[in-house]
Image (cartoon, rainbow, N blue to C red; front, side, top):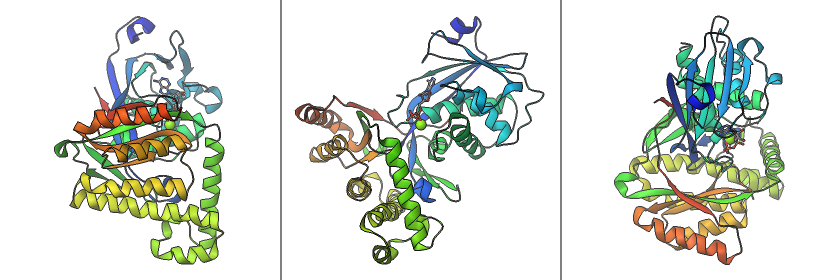
Length: 378
Ligand code: ADP
Ligand code: MG
């Protein structure tokens, strides 16, 4: 299906935005800490035609034959449901969150296509939000920065879609650059782009999607957030970001064992993100392997958000020569990443696939991602 088939004319512009992978820094975002994602070479494209009335119409190859519409005079989350809320919500959030005056603006016809896998932890949601946000800002001449757009995307996802997510995904999708990672301080929202330099080191990142979707992911996420809040309160700090590795002995005295281990994951993970940034700058990507593995072990043993499939993916990749590997994303399923020599890609893919078969697990989906440019007009 194409824009032309849906709307009967050719689009005037195309914008695209990527999904993302988090290199390191898991569950640190809601603790005011650090994350280090990169935008990937899987993108969502929004083709757009300008209308001369107030209507927004949206269609997606994702749901052929359906066209959703909403007037710019009716923008309100109560009128949005299903996937089209990811598009309508952006227009609403531009007004509500960024204060854009849409009163004199006309609407658009929008058609969405994507090769970002949905629900695999690669943030197809940010890809759709950020492409649309950049398009609307440009076409309505709103003059918003990419950092402002990241907040708009998060606001829309939180309040129009209703998913309580942080700002990492939108930051990566908007600020990503080729062969680089986005270092984001989730408290100040300061960002820095750091060279990843995989290509010049003959390395690449493999995504191992276990295709495990755990029913208790939402409950587990909330329980982890609660533990972190309890830990911060007991330590007398605003957020676990304010606890350093040197404070851990005191944390152990104050906290019950489970809460302590949750806190220790966050505190050491923040430190690992800082160490990864420094290591990338000073020594390059081959030197970050042990940090990735330590991150995985911390999520497996202290934060307890891994699953046997993710552990097997990481162990098998490491046993077959990966430089580093870890689960990525919120946990309880989803994907792992492995940093590998380009020439080891086949061996490691085969080994992981065979190990999954031997354990009776569903066949994983293994593919390479490159760190790619963020949202753009194509
Ligand atoms: P993830 O971001 O990890 O892929 P989410 O649940 O956050 O998973 O977002 C997935 C949702 O985003 C889909 O269920 C759908 O509503 C919306 N979405 C993503 N890509 C598209 C697309 N190409 N067309 C329509 N909706 C999409
Ligand atoms: Mg998402």
